[in-house]
Image (cartoon, rainbow, N blue to C red):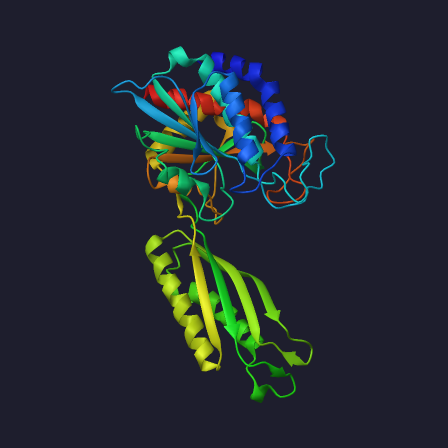
Length: 394
């Protein structure tokens, strides 16, 4: 089976590169992936793979193999959206859309899953079950396209026995992959705080309210919430990434200040408790200093959980396919992924694919110079096909 997959991967390799470069040149932001979705559908049509579109927005769900009583369905997922970043790479396939770029590798994920689809379509008669293909929009923006696709039933009729997702990973070399069992990535919530009060002359602070000082105290108190109120063994992080006053000058105290930030953790009970602590803290500190305050917490993705039993099986299958030296252990990450929604519905494994090489260098995610060594497709396409077939035989 491995030999057949490797040969088919090589057959589709150049097509996958062309697909990736087309997607990279024509990126679309979250919830705007209409042309990307149409392009994916055209590829599936070309390879005679049935699918449904407009699921959870511009999402697509395809299938390979027959639904047979007693046999499993394995789902494979790729995300399709880009980021609001101006590309700085000087390459023939650079983004043609000003201010929009595939800086997180979703073009790679989509092209990889299309390549995997081709391989599995050619091996359809050898499938012991059905493979569901999930091409998902809007991973980069809350509340996340995964939540909408789930609401539209992408995990029903039948419910998959497992779902796999993969993501490019700059720290890993081309040909390497990485796995982590259990809690792997954090939940994410967005925090928006507005402070209001009578502004005034900087030389007479007693006649006004110093909202900048209040904001500074709030930032410190929020950090102390993590260090003093949370369980030290529960990973948690809060970051205020933006502070902006309306008005204000060297000698003027502003009448309005905005704070924006993110809160991440890996415990749902503490997550809810922390939300209430933040709300109480903002209200009471504003009252103490004679100001008014509003706080909005936008609930984002839950933590991502890799089922230990499934992840163990998938890791062993990856060793069979790539060799033990190519399969790495990943550390816990406080970044977030809306694949996490799937992981709270069915058994899931989200793993990483290496993209680094000496000729490409290390290109960090979410930067204007992000890029990949496209030889990674020899790993990403073939491995995902093998993992799906391996799990269907289990």
